[in-house]
Length: 206
Image 1 (cartoon, rainbow, N blue to C red):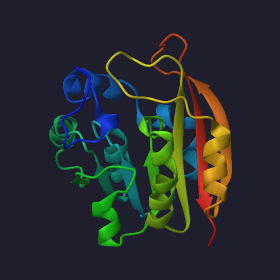
Image 2: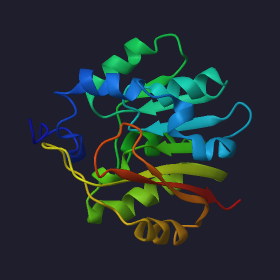
Image 3: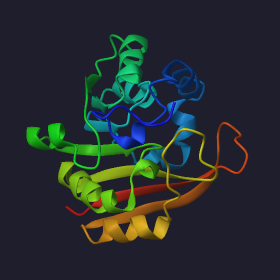
């Protein structure tokens, strides 16, 4: 375990080999638990939603069950297959795409009312974050919201992660017309020693 295959994003290192265990971990907590601080900011009615780094599809399926039109982007094929199986019939549309550029989604020209990056941003190297924020901004509809979590704490063996300061992320967002509507901290839901999270919700000006 360690480096991903050459045709996979570097941030996916370690995820394919551990896909089954990770999917069980993801599914052990609910969408409402993971996003409890931001639930009131999700679109109230049927909306177009993109879940980037969707993993097992937990959040994507929960949002689809609320009536939203959901695209789940997951670059690790082992996780994508598990998600498609676990949440078959949910109405979620799966795709193979990844930051920083999201070439498939960008080329499609779609715009979304909500974009989720749950435990994703920490995988991007410093030089990848500006183009990633450009790509995300380009996928948001006017008035749309970006839901983003930042992981802080020890890096598991075999993974590529960075402890990204919230201030850096907010600066990138503001320079692209995104403004924060939520900025808070929370402990790790799995009780991992030394791990905590920053929760950000950023809105694109209309």
